[in-house]
Image (cartoon, rainbow, N blue to C red; front, side, top):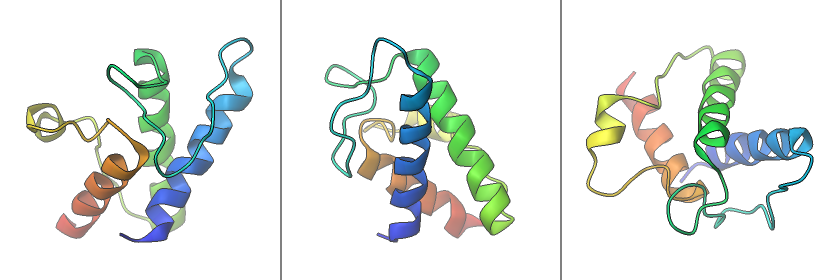
Length: 97
């Protein structure tokens, strides 16, 4: 897995953390659980994360991807489960381009 993808997600999570007043994300790392039964993000937080990651990839690498897609929603194992699963999915999208 390419570190730049993980770095973009972690950077985005830290930005989200700065906007939360009461509910801070804890222990942000490669293994952070994002969404689901053990996830730290609610639906608004997940949407914010997706938007930030898409924007950062567009700005830094001049590539446009859509993370929240039918492909993502139909996967057997959710790409939104953790930082690592999201990074893997983002890399798949980038490799398709």
